[in-house]
Image (cartoon, rainbow, N blue to C red; front, side):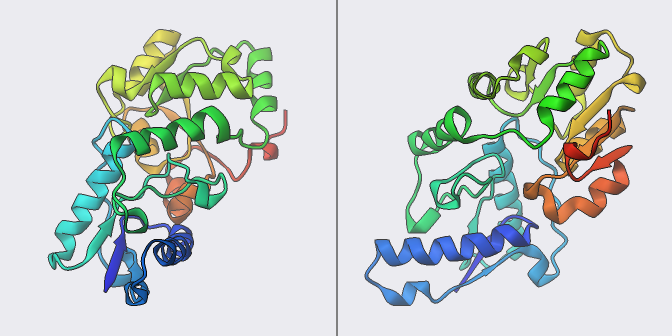
Length: 252
């Protein structure tokens, strides 16, 4: 049996393979169910880069899963939705996987929301160098705001918990703006609020689809490496005006 993960990230494939086998063994007495092969699109040479038109992490995860299912054609295989914005306990706090069939068990809306709450309220951590970066921008009088696909109550709780909410004049969310980061609309509205021209506004991002949309509107983009987008770093580096593997690499 094949199980497909709707991602290009080989690291997530390796992690999820171990998680699935461990979870299935704990939840079933049928040993034969562990006889599966976990695959990602590149394993089969599939051209898989669906447009993420959803307004939340979950919606985009489902879009990718549905597109992969269509590509496979054979309905006998399982497809797992991947979501870099979700953290599960099995990954010990690292950005991870959300699956509609996680461990052979269907997750309801309440369980999904609980995982989101746990991550943003208790687990999400700052990237190295973030505070020094924000302090340097503040000292130079640079105005800043947040444009995010995360729901407001989650991002506000997370920013407050790690102590950086004070640096931002406003938070724009895709849900409230009725858009997604596959469109530059949220960045354009943020720039308008800041009173800066698009060509003079720098978008700091780590996701390839968001970088692509920001660049399409004429923004300058500063990309920062994130493990969730490890498989797309070559593309991200090529698209961006500035690229850093860590904010610690910046010299002020």
